[in-house]
Length: 102
Image (cartoon, rainbow, N blue to C red; front, side, top):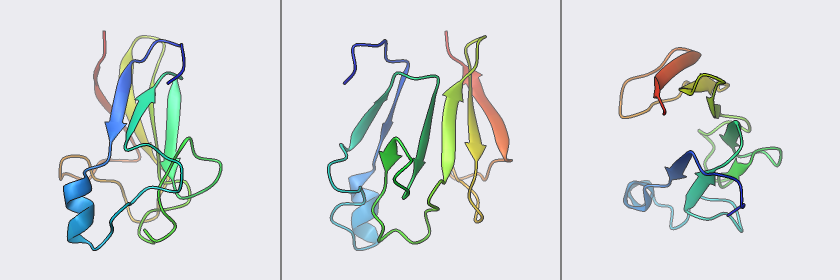
């Protein structure tokens, strides 16, 4: 983890990934918990993403979504995928404010 201040984490649900037949849904060398220290983190299968998923996850876009925090501390998710992004079951619009992170 970087020495910068962590404002959030992303974690792979390994139990869920086993239901779809994957032992490891992450790209090689990626940790199952990602500590967010930059203003934004992009997730997907592409090499340009900070947190990369396995190429075997064909339903995940090369650049699937960006999770970020704006200057006022609001946390948002921006969907870049063609199939949508789901967080805790409901589908979200292309840009959605999640909460006010203090």
